[in-house]
Image (tube, rainbow, N blue to C red):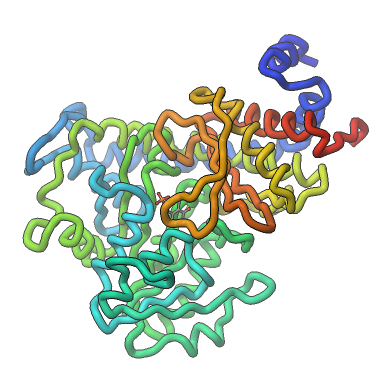
Length: 432
Ligand SMILES: *Cc1c(COP(=O)(O)O)cnc(C)c1O
């Protein structure tokens, strides 16, 4: 037993009971952590290889301003992303403000009035409801005459193949597949399952564009969705691929035509990828991508640790303590606002930044109920950094994710448990 470590945790406010409970769980997870490390090693080699192939050099880190013509760093980074994620082309820009923007851009640039968008995996991420027009919003796809169809997953989480087949029609132009569960309690889709779904859809309608919302999925597996038939993957740089260093940004990688359409929409018809200054953030994009496989591995360990801790304490967790992982999100259902809030306070109290503030529920733009968010991040709202959030409504589920290092994720989870323990909201059984 490492008493010095225990003392250090104690100084941070972690009691002996909570610490010992955590150590016991961690010990049991050693074999799984080894698997995660092996996957991170594979993905690290993939990133390095893409950087070497595209001759990344110190010149790539220079700042461009104004129109940003001939920005070597920007153009090379897009080639690196294309190679790393196995696409023909990529758009990776600080002008893409977040994940929702990247997804809206990919949809709005590849759909035309009269087309139909299909989600064969149920309701998409909350913020996309306004993009699509499921909830009326200015500038939605619905306002431009793009219709939307949805086929829910079956009770057991499987694809409703019959329903999907019936939903595909002559107007179906683009299919959106969300890899991660987001704010739902369905399982996350593995890359293999996404491949199976795409094969089924392309068999019915070969020219349909299959887009994957790849948020939170990057580098969790050895394969990415473009390797199983997706035409386009979309994500945020303040999640996995930014490695915690990118201060803003989003990406679209895939078929040349899809990416081109997005570029002409992001800037302007006629301009496309040729403009868009990188304003000095480009080095963080490279360095973040370089670190991303390791950062994602730490976040994954944190998610698995949290699942096992809270499962042992009797809470419903998705994924459960033993199942395989396809994103970095961990849902814990508390069925009690007090417990949910205590959990979030613990995550906040463990942060390197803003540890002294108390998170409170608020009406966040894009969401239809109050949301509580705990994050003490270097980059505002970055959810590759240790964070927890969830809509304050039944079943009072918290979505926990991130951690730039495993050790910080561990402290966060221990601190969340500490808050519940101190308020007598959980009992820790010392024998288990
Ligand atoms: C985070 C997320 C988004 C939206 O990204 P923001 O950067 O928050 O706008 C979309 N889809 C999924 C699955 C996400 O996890």
